[in-house]
Image (cartoon, rainbow, N blue to C red):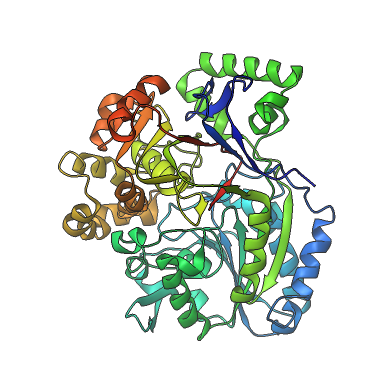
Length: 524
């Protein structure tokens, strides 16, 4: 068993601490008395993974065993998480492949011959054939692609079904093939407590008409803890929609959880506690950092994006979504939860090179904001690690770079920020225009572009943090880009703390969320 997470108080003996900053990293000395929130050490992965998958399918929670749900002549739709999970991408064979292969074997044994596989990409960009093959494996890819293995298309009017509305008046519209199936089998990877559960089908197979009910400023500002679903307004909306879906088509979900091994052996020092680095770790740090700093930007990005994580699987649970997800959350919490006493005046976060929306792509400034204020800020249960009116300091260069194929609407959204950065103003004045723009829709459907509304949703993800914080500072951030987003840039941590002085005083309490690997702060 790995050691639990803990909080370190920085003193004179504390070595410099590793800090991610986009496609790079550094060692940084924090002021004496700062608190460092470390994740638990990585748990061991399941040794007999094939056996664990089989056991989950045959002994599900709140459902008959999967073989009893399969019958000749039925319509079976297997849905799986897209390339936004896990991060970094998993070393092959992917857990989605392993699960899907066993589901297909059971379906074949039952005589089911009407089977479709759909990537639940929602308003994300379509996965390329190579990306689909990597997720499901070559054998499944060759048997089903392209006619029976495809991406969800949230803008195809002929392949969307409106299932009704929730008691709150929320439209429920999902993929028609899935809606008209006799059974949906959803194959999930839960990287954080924000993933999985009711969200899977209700979001992954939805249209803009459905998503707009929970992906909006009001809901996100009132989702005070995304990692505590019963108290999250967003998850409550997911649950209501899932009830409508489940009332019309049965859903059998298979949820899997991961350990804290996001980096291969050559980068293992990135996951170790700094005072425990041995000579090999120190040499690896120096060699990798030197090579990384000398590489061109394109080469550096290519190398990082090609990184494969040697994740171990810590849990496989299957059955009725509402019965499965508590087991999934328990496994996530066991791997990631670290108890923290009280909030700080200043929170520090080192942002890595990847987020759910720049896989094999570029992390543009909007995505940097979303990763920092939407994801890392929200890696807590209970309350944020920084107090109301406090300051967040992020490490990231915030370059003015966009992927022209993947993020065309982001380029135009960035220009809107010269007019206003207010989420409500952007939502009210511009969201519908971008969401219904014919060119953005065309690129989403026929190329590999994120939906026209996607940058708005990324901006809304940061709305809660923007409302909570008095100041946001990026160490090493491009000054013009950072200013366009409404934040401030600093050349060093000392400069950032000096900028924050007017807000939090000369001797603020500081907490550093030491991630990745994933850590979830349980703030008391």
